[in-house]
Picture 1 (cartoon, rainbow, N blue to C red):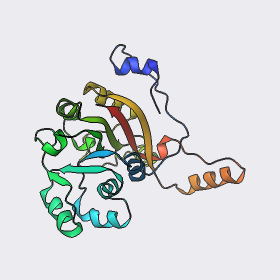
Picture 2: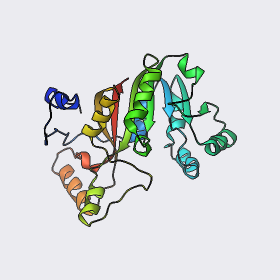
Picture 3: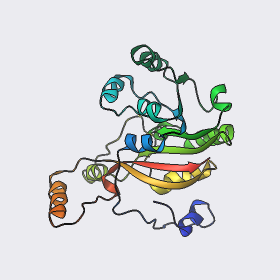
Picture 4: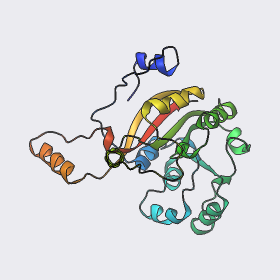
Length: 244
């Protein structure tokens, strides 16, 4: 999805309203997040921020083809990861032989290999919701790497999943205990704009497994000759692609 001109006036702060209605895609394909990011990175030069994941999950994800850093490394013309988790870094170096990850803080440390080259994408996968000040964090990336990295690709949890809303109706907030924020397409684009970046496209990804009622509806739709499609509440993640 993209934002229309009227929504952009609010995103840029040219207009204000206590309520605006942002059009959202009702029915679009919902790709797997790792597969989508892998395909868009094919043949590209990629900086992968927060690349290591939780150490106990890495081996299993590699086995299922869902450890993003491996998938990016396999298809990109060049890929370098950056992370602050030294223990996980030593683990993937010794167990899996990865040597394209550097240890450090991307917003404060200087990395010559990154600074001395041109890159197509900086990918932040499920990272921004863990950052105390996301606008400051993104602004630092723009300040340090504008002209070096062309675009930033940010993925965050979708605030409007059916599971999340169903739990809320039961007076329960279901959330990762380290998350600081919930994001929607508008709020993610607003954060990126406040950091000096312009969102070009929003995608929804990672289809949530259907419950029994949804499975029946989905199957019946196919049986009557229509192509089954799902709205954005069936997606667990939002992907924003923005110019730095």
